[in-house]
Image (cartoon, rainbow, N blue to C red; front, side, top):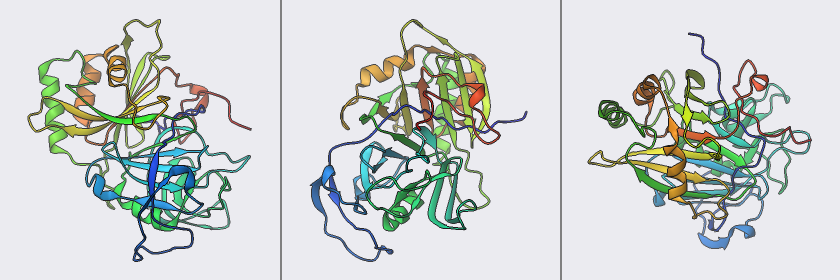
Length: 343
């Protein structure tokens, strides 16, 4: 079976964070040995190059990166807890950073750009074509050729805690990030045997690795209400494409992103990080609304079985009303479009 490359992409603005953060750095610092004072400041008070980092707030588990183009900020969450925030510089006019829900497809500690005079790109994490999170210039406004520039110390801290498959959400619209527990979530009407298989696989697997020579096995699930299909994506390749049915299909599903944290000790519930798009505040996630959207989806037994086989802690599960347009596919990417490219 010939697999296709996959990136989940939306031209409409999806998400940004807000709130109070702690300040811990400035432009021009190239190492991590210096100690910075931690002072609580409103997010609006951050100056170009400033950042904060509090990994002790959540020491283990899957990470998500949220980039707000309007605010020129990047927020880092681990298990739904914000552990860092940084000023960024995104793509300038004519080279705008694409908005959407992506995953990290490739990581390079030191990449040199073949398109721009072998320019160094430290701590590169590619999420769409040549677009990457990486250390770069931070003048206080969009200045890149499409990448998201981070302060070098912040990029150094972020690089080792992500993995192939880590979600990168680029947007302008404010939204919420929270946690929820649910028995299955994906397996809404499946038999006990498949749920037990899913539980066993999650217990047996850790987060995907990025070690040389290792298969990261990063798995994501996308359900498109417009296509009435579920797509299973392994390491950027589509390995599952099956029809789904949606109850009350006259009502929109909306756009929802869930990141699997893991299962609790007795195995009765799966713990998810939910990104409530457009909720208006970082901590405001409507759990009932998020779960209700997933309960309307019905899949084939084959789809359930394959998901149960490949799902792991750190898997991303996305629901959207958007179609997966064949016209937007390239040789390297599988793209979901919402609006035309910003000029």
